Length: 424
Image (cartoon, rainbow, N blue to C red; front, side, top):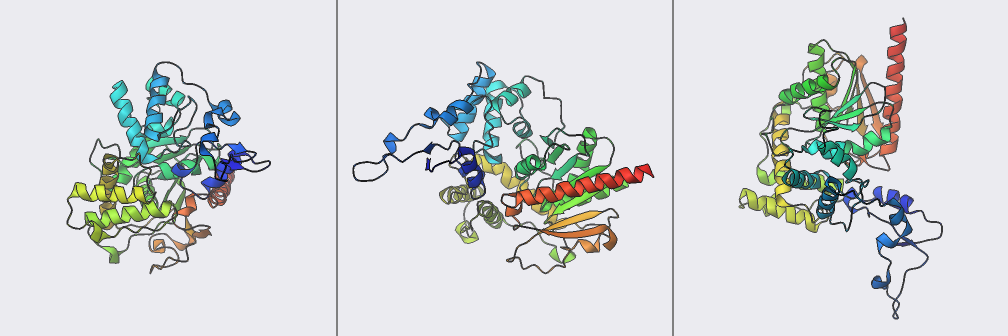
């Protein structure tokens, strides 16, 4: 509930998105002329109009149809803790995220008997879209790990690879903001659905994703990219495509670091792993983690996970609806990805590569300006640029718009060069 002359509810929500993690952004904003007060001058909460009585909510809400839509709307509402969900309401815009999405697909599987992969909710995030997916109109459109985040456009498709957590959620807003000039796909890590063992080698991940990508687009040119660990896997995918005689039009690494010989290590113990996951959650929420490994020492694996989850909920890094079981697949995929990073050593790559470095004054890492990639990419083919934000905020507003504008210009320039080359 907000008070202010001329305020626009949607603008308020967008402003909050720049400051808060998605699950803390209000589902509905109600603009009032004044807050109702009690006799002693405090806000009279009982007198506040119900959100569904506000004109905005009434205009946006469209009741689900009987049958599959009604069942899905009920699942969405239960998982999100919402009073009601309309047939065109977007699960992620209502506060959902990758961890809560695992609850949705599990409940839908139990409800319908259909084996719903996690990617389905990213491709069909509204009640009506997911109902259509379940009824078979979208079921055959995409393969295994490759998630369609934006299907429109005639330009060269963009394929981005997940970071260490394995989910494609960080790329949803990037795909939307980039526009509809070209399709945008993202790779989700195997094992995140909880139905297979995660892979523990970067090379194996790269081969699997290249195979999936070539089902979607059999021949190049390709545009590859990834944030953090996603950039490392994308780099190896580009090398694999070179070996297969395919053209990579552009490789874009977003604040990714090349593994070095000095970083040979084993994967972290579970206490350190969960501490690192807590740090990622906290920074994504714009906070600093206070979870220390010693708080988890001496506990069983399940007890450690429960302690981590409770700590994250109390700190508001996780919504209360997230269950401990929702975190297990995420932990296992993160562990496998860290093992993959610990043993991977890049090789030479002859193609063009753009490294976008997040400006982060706090970073103190003993690598060269190229984040270690100049060892593997010829200087003439490697381009370095800085983008606003730190490692975690670079994919969120207020920095995301500038990043996508830069990417859009880059991709347009690359395609213009390709057209000129074809003309000569």
